[in-house]
Length: 159
Image (cartoon, rainbow, N blue to C red; front, side, top):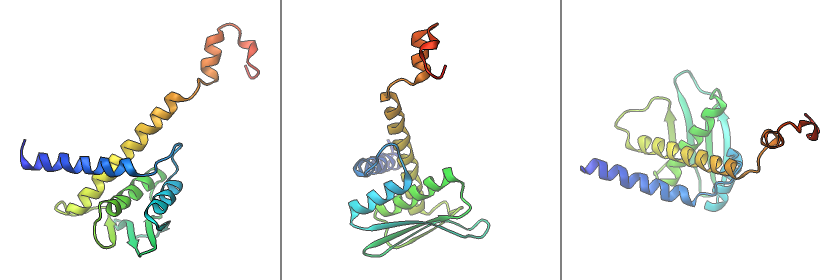
């Protein structure tokens, strides 16, 4: 194993350790998650939208001692909003110094941006895996109930 592979594995382990400490609840809701992360870190987290120019900024993280402002491009699709927020949380949790202005296209050599992006993908995978486990534990729905009764569909009130 070369040095880069080792560093990558160590970084992924570091991210997974951090993600394991985050207050992720199910069903997952982004604002509730950010509020809980803020409480965990002793800060208020403000999630907002910002207008941007075409090809411009997709996310922004700005911090003070008591507040963290996490801004997402106003035109970002709902599914992309969570990814942008996870990316910005990555900057925060990884301890990247300063505030961050994240563009849609970053320079390939920008290590902090690459780390925040990797963190976002790992966090999303964690949330999705936990949600799938949660769904597996739910009692069977009406479809399963109807299948169990077979020809006795008349027993189901809405059949």
